[in-house]
Length: 429
Image 1 (cartoon, rainbow, N blue to C red):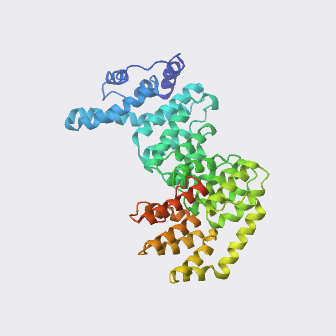
Image 2: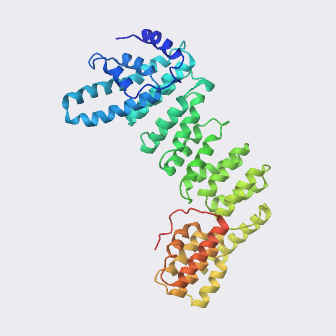
């Protein structure tokens, strides 16, 4: 068995050779043939590490995929299956060998980066919680990674984290430990990988929990939360919004902008006043982001004037305290003329759009054609995100008048807020 010192002497000249990492790849089966020339029972993890380090990452990826496919096919052939399983076990030991290699300060930076990328790719192919924990140990040893000479390591790490996030292979403390121990050039790929997970809600929630671990000088996690939220539906997410809202007062304009952009998608009534305060921000991009968020959260089209928004906000609160609840209670039982009068008033009180929408939706259940048209028209005026799916469900109604009312309500949504993707709070009929 090779010692670590022997492995270093063997690997360093190979990785330093021209064209080893950037040259043309070998035929797909050449790597497998090189490995097959060593008897499976004689193949050590160190020997396999040398062979894999001498190959391109694309070749290694194809070989790992072929190994998994071969293992599946070999279930019908016990002898062949045992041989493939033995090689696979050796491959799973290679990241441990590479971890020792990464701890050696004498290895050139390019070789350091290539060894890390190889280890990441092998662990990604395993897709297991144990592999993720090994990944954290491997990355923690990569202190020799130079920012401008990291090669494919950052991109491979990003893909590995994205897969692990999509499959939920880690507990949050494991991710936080990985992030904290990673060298600076590898921290951004980690959060990029989390943001790219298949479930945007899970990605955004995980990144929000990571906010406390991020260096105060780096607001990039806020941006990745925003990117993850853009891939999901708009709708309240208080556990994320409350954490993000604290950054509206951050000294960095970029952080304030990203906080406002996140709240445009997941904010609630409690975040309206802090957003109004940002309309007085010295940075124009923050003002624009806060104004966009206010329009999305309230449905109002006021200009970016903090005084006018504050006056509107105070008027809404005063109405609710004085008569809002009573008017909602009267809505369902009032005669048609009375319902119309109430709707004309309450549908301008958009700060309480969620509460109002619930009562207006009650008119849609079992109502006749004129009642449906009245309720849809009111929802179009109110433009509550929670009711958009319900409004859309009436576009296909057989009554032409109801169909027309639903289309008019949708146009109102589109004019006020653009292409809004609602949180599925309103259940389609």
